Image (cartoon, rainbow, N blue to C red; front, side):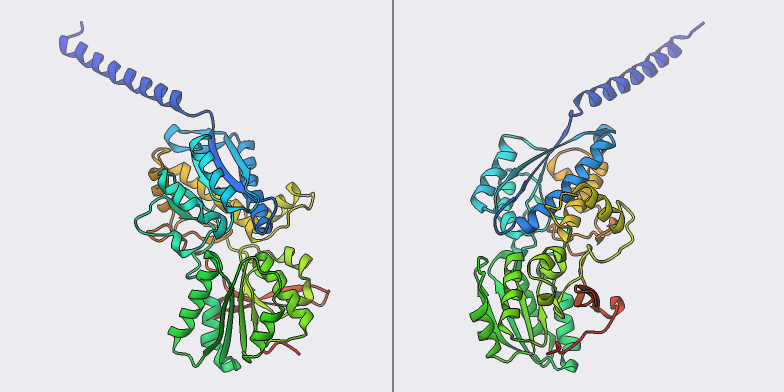
Length: 423
């Protein structure tokens, strides 16, 4: 015979159980049919060479997850398919601004991913902040994007521009004087990406205490495609090292014009010979790239990932998927895939799809997420301070092309620099 107390106890147990089932049912009912990720890409214009590989990498990740049934989203304890909503901004900032607004206000995406590069990211930063939408910044490294009072941005795939050139500057200041580097020329495109890097190089040199003089320091429009006069102006200052900082088209034009001029500087640094090597080999050519210094990125370094694919596996799978040859593999293809890995990890750990909850979940990955791009690490403003790229030199490979030699820092070096450049 049941006592009154036992009856009440059983009722309570059944009530709690029913409540739990109902809560789970309600949670399952509110799970979205898809996770909408909105992004932009540039199929034409000045930034197509970096934007299309980045977009291909992100799309690779989306297709991979959807083939597995979707991406796991912790608040709903299930995999949910991804819908990628992408618009072509054609490398135009005004168009990009309109399309960022459209993704937020009309498409109502769950996650907003910036186009590649600082120029096309720059217009998205204030728009995302105004709408309290987290901007997942793939490769826009302008230092001005990251402020402590703006929680609506995170940088995923490369370090903020203010620290990116640290190893290049350290090589010049610490090993340069012994090699004979005492006079440095800096030429840069005036945008958030390369302008910030120029400022960083300038600061690293001036604060190093090394006996190095900056004899030339000039900014030019990002649209610059003829460097012949600038090269002659630099030559007149008799530098021991030239640091040229531009986007893809800038670097291609500079290296071509330098080769055509017959001028030989003892040390030449540029950015995209390391970031988009295949593209520069096809456009500037290996001869123009020989003996130049550049960043050695995750498209040429083999880190040991603890999450996601290895470089070799990813490169093979990416190449198979993009077998039409319209997009070339390089760092930006890695960057887009890495952005997907960061989103995947964030969704697997977030408490909700609320924007600041996602920001916290991604922030909590700092120092813990290790991928084919090295260790993911954020500062409190959302700027990437991990994934720093070593300095490399492109040497003739004996087969009509070039190969990388890491020359700095010493613990990562695979060879010694060839200085001065053979005349």
